[in-house]
Amino acid sequence: MTPQSDEDEVWRQIVASFNDTAERDSADQPWPDSENVPAEPTRRVVRPPEESDEEQDEPLDEAPDGDDEESEEGHFEPPVPPPLPKLDVTTKLAWVALFGGPAYLLVAAMADWRMEGWALFAAVAAFIGGFVALVVRMGDGPPNDSGWDDGAVL
Image (cartoon, rainbow, N blue to C red; front, side):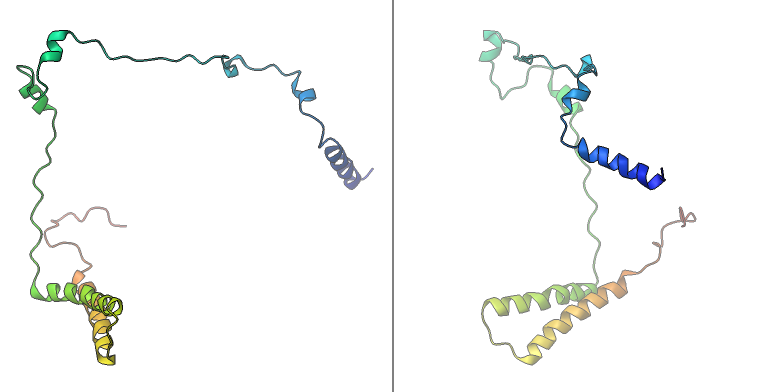
């Protein structure tokens, strides 16, 4: 017998047993107890503790005595964020050009204005110029106040 014929015989057996039911083979294997599920699942109902009449009459706006400091202790209040950096006139103009050119084109298209060639050119040039100006001014070096340690350099 050749190795090819052995392989063909194995494939014939696999194809012949393809539609056989799995119950015949798995009936001999025990089902693990950890997989058994109870017929009726147990349900837990958690009820809040009952309050006395005196506690219910107390107004909800007022905190109980002595709890003001304790409730404030666990409350986190984030620090005030630092102010935004001051921008120079060139950066402000670059941002206006970056958003102003497309905004003009959008408004003109929605209002169905007739746009001259020079206006289209100016809007597109403003967008491209603003983008280039911001990228050039961005800077790719470390900040000047980084100190002597540059950190991890890869």
